[in-house]
Amino acid sequence: MVWPSSGMVRTGMAEAERSKGPFSPRTADRGYGHRFYARLVLVTLCGGVGAARLLAGLVQVTPPRDITAIVNVGDDMTLHGLHISPDLDTVTYTLAGMDNRETGWGVAGETWTVMEELARLGGESWFKLGDRDLATHLFRTERLRAGAPLSVVTAEVAARRDIAVRLLPVTDDPLRTRVTLDEATELGPAGTEVAFQDYFVRLQHQATVRAVAFAGADGAKPGPGVLDALREASAIVVCPSNPIVSIGPLLAVPGVQPELEARRDRVAAVSPIIAGSALKGPAARLMSELGLEATVVGVARLYAPWVATLVIDERDRDLADAVEAEGVRCVVAPTIMSTPEKAAALGRTVLDAVE
Ligand code: GDP
Ligand code: CA
Image 1 (spheres, helix red, strand yellow):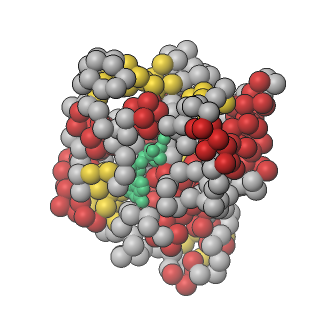
Image 2 (cartoon, protein in one colour):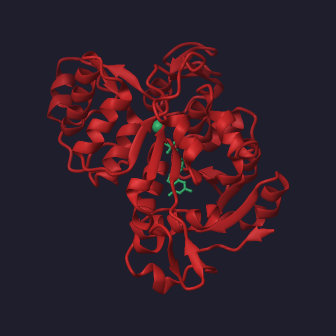
């Protein structure tokens, strides 16, 4: 059976109750009318932009302190000697309200003095790092060099940016997404394996992909708190992130997927694929190139072993039965988070789906 969109058919909590304030309806053990709303301890699985947007919605409808975000580090890289963590930074900048909504990455109101001067010197300038953004990478790199694990540095940055959501890199160990290209590019002949950012930024994800691998994953330990968070969560939300290169690396860390399978009933995902495409980025293309169906049904099939509920966009309503045929409960709702209000509405949909 297909769940009606909670955006349209509202069961349970009434709108009037929600308007008592964003957090009041979910305070522990407080009853509203005939229903009680238990406090949710929420864990989200995150890539970059799609996850950041959903988190920005969730913090409007549930206490940020009750949310733990487990974030991909497969996109991380070293450039100019600096440790760059694009997904952690996207999530952090967004929750701090300093994200650049036009680009979808980096800091709003950014300046480019360093980059311009670097380009004049003939330095590597294909990966744009704004002046304010650079401060993050300088801070992180210095702390890592002094021996602090990535999880500690991430928590320090989050605290200094007043972020109440707990941000956990999926691992403190080096895990790097590698992409084998299926065609010749400026980076080499067909069959060349490149670092994720070479594929994603340098080649603008325009090359055909033969395979994706997660170097270092086998030996990686889940970061401190990661498995406990999954074990103790009352609900686990898979953000609308790239299933292959954002969620894939999380599952590749030993221990994570078994824990998700054990908690499957409590796991809900939001599809990053809408009407057969990604809103941005190579998710749909990567899925087809790797032999998966680039639709919500393909997402359902891929996630079915460890996801019980998939939220799909209204535009895919006709595929809801096919999603359920994959053994995944289907919720149809508006999922395009073009405004903070729409992100909050999707946050509510997701909470309703896992409650
Ligand atoms: P990154 O920012 O490049 O790390 O990318 P993500 O892993 O977050 O994946 C981007 C994916 O998020 C794309 O497949 C988009 O379709 C999806 N996405 C971004 N914004 C939204 C949104 O508002 N709604 C939904 N459903 N998906 C989104
Ligand atoms: Ca990313």
